Length: 122
Image (cartoon, rainbow, N blue to C red; front, side, top):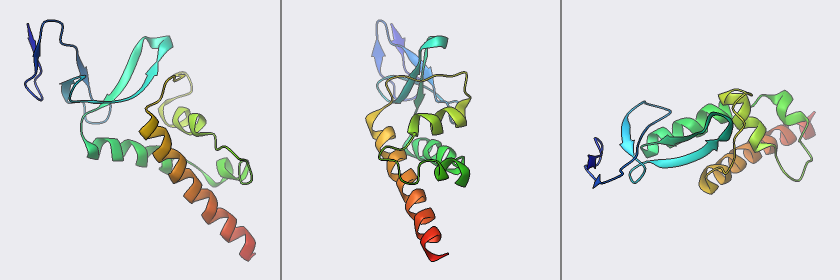
């Protein structure tokens, strides 16, 4: 019988995971799934809302104006590409958390809208 070091949950086959942001151990019940990296046979998790927000900030801080220039008028933003740029191109992801994907899309759209506004003023 295993016990979660974070939330105290107990289970016969309790799986513990490390937060990819702070490194804290927890179980899959008290952690937020981010995405899978199938080539490495692993999944990325974060444990708290601040860790989730920090990951979103890391990705959006890594979006350069050059990245956005290519998608200023695209219907869909390359959110997968933004994540890959942040975590390394060798970590091809699958099945991202819908909440993470939505947040990153909104943040990227905000950056794109700001670039469009700046472009229209010049």
